Image (cartoon, rainbow, N blue to C red):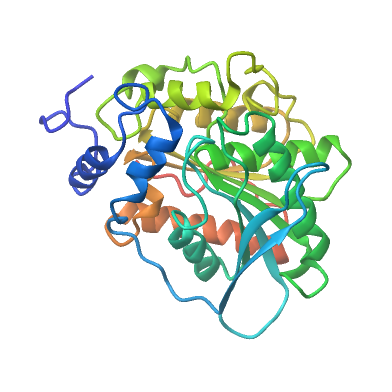
Length: 335
């Protein structure tokens, strides 16, 4: 692989300075940093760079019921500006390798999704590993989906019970599709769309992009190995479809919009998942950004491709109110 900063760098020129800054601030997971609590302390120190927090109509922190026998879940609910009318309800799961991040780190992303799509966004603080290993996060995701779907048509949230969307980035993207899988397997609730932004889908970690993008593009293959160890522990089943949805039967799932980045170790598994969904008869639209890196969607103020990707995501979400079947093989693809 070409070293960063050389003439053969595959990143977009406007992305390289951002990737270098993010990499410098990020903990050396699995190297000099092996403890999750220490990693969280390091990430809490520097402010987010280049992220915007657009205005929305209202924001409220609250708790909702967790899975049976588990604690209540903190959520942050974002209502868009403008008159109340039937809107989508997006249940959003943050990234962070099932181990890091939370409501505050992804506040700007949740606000942007709310403002751009006109949807009510419910951002979920699921339990983190290694304190709470698989399947805790998956069960929390499903519990949050059930709560949101139960209120989507009651006026408390979006107002359209047929326009419930699961969405997330990175590990949150994995949880967004796992929640949809669980809803199918457990006879509801109905999900209109799953939005998977550079999702974590396969504990096997053996795709070609794990090698070609192993280092030099912010998220590394070593980081991902560390995240999986935290999430699964020594005895966790990485082949379980709720841990690795790439292994699941994907029939009868809701339509999907999948975003992938060409300079991301997770690129190939996201692309393969889109193909597998299509073969299972699930409508899929895709946005592939060949010169982008894992996490790029969080920087629309700095990156043209982030703005384009967000516009496609917002359009897919907004379409669930009036057209619940987004079709096509490739939509919003660039690079």
